[in-house]
Structures are given as C-alpha cells and as structure tokens.
Amino acid sequence: MTVTAEVVSIHRMTPRVKQFRLRAEGHEFDYEPGQHTTVQFERDGEEVVRPYTPTSLPGTDSITLAIKVYDDGTASAYMHTRRVGDEVVLGSLEGNLTLENPEADVAFVATGTGITPVMALLKQYLREGEGDAHFFFGEKDRESVLYRETLDQLEAEHENLTVVYSLSDSGYEWTGPTGHVQEHLEASLDDFEGRDFYVCGVPAMVVETTERLAALGAPDDRVFTEGWEEGAVADEDDGG
Image (tube, rainbow, N blue to C red; front, side, top):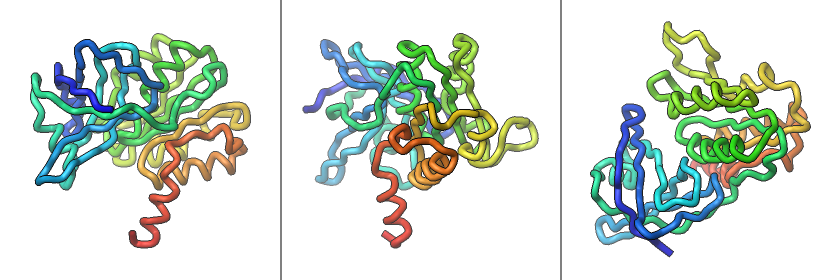
C-alpha cells in the first residue's frame, strides 16, 4: 500500500541532511516507532524504492524524515530537490527495530543517520518508560551532529536520560569524547546484563558494537538491531 503525502516543511539540519515533514491529509500514520517507510518514484523508466525511518511518533497525518544526500545517491538526491508543496509517494511502514520493553533500563547507540529510528524509540521510551536511559551518538564532526538541540532538551527535561556524543574528527574546540562511540559504553554504563540495547548505524559499526556488548556481558536477546547488518559486512568482506 502506498500513500501520497505533501511536503509541508523542509529544515536543513546539517550541510548534507534535510528534515522533511510530510503530511497526508485524512490519513493516519499508524506504525511502531523505529519502523521505516519507503520513498518511491520512477527514474529513467525504472521504479526507485528507498527506506527512510520517521523520527516522529505515530498517530497523526504527518511524519518527519531526516535524509542525508550522497554524491551518488538516487533517492537522496531526489528528496533534496523537493520543495514545499511537492508530493511524495510513501510505502507501508514496517521493520523489526521497535521498543521491546518500556519498563527495562535501555541504551541507544547510533551513528550518522542511524539516529533516525532510535530517536523515535527514545521519544517513545521517555513517554512510556521510567527506567534509566542512555543515548550514545557518534559523528564525524560537530556540524554533522543531528538532533543535538532536541537531545539536549530531552536530557534537561528527563532526569533518567544521559546523552553521550563522540566525534571522530573533533577539532580543537571539542572537549567531549572522541573516537568510535561504542568505545565509550564502559565508561558510562555499569550494568550490561540487565539492560536493553538498541543499535543502528553503518553495518560495520553495528556488528562491532554487538560484538563488544557480548564481550561486556550483554545477553544476545537484549541487543536489538535492524537485523541485516552482518550480511552487509560479509558482502563487503567478499568484495560484493
């Protein structure tokens, strides 16, 4: 099933990321936070279908998508040329990365645009859960950090939320953590067995983080990812 939505606002978040608010009048977007939709269009006689995850919560006629443009990207280039008033065809919302237990302590670990599903999960958790929540986000540099104002505001409003940023190319003005974000889990958390972990980002980061969590004692059934990352890393290793 598809639905046609209108672009009602566009906000440039970073030099390469725009946030689009899309509204389908008379339609209610019903999904589990963390699930993704698809942007669908035709290019050179072929149908293009690409997944993107709303950062907004369900139950309204609108969703927000944060989309990074890539030099060789087809769908991202298409979206970055949309204007307010344009129409975009969206597919059904689906996916496996959803909040499992709002009563458990949690840690969200994300890099890049992998932040989009975990932002939705964090909003749901802060609305429904009461446990301890940590949010770890890694990026290259300060200007590329997505949703920093939102995360800082949520941290200020919720005593049970701690946000940790880590930059790989920090620059001289950055005094916070540096390097890969998953390297800072041990410094911030003292319980890996009794907490749920949600991990999303580039496949290599997801695989490395899940391996690191296993070594730190996190049970396999309490580490949640989108589920396809190991195959993607294996394909890269095979030259695919």
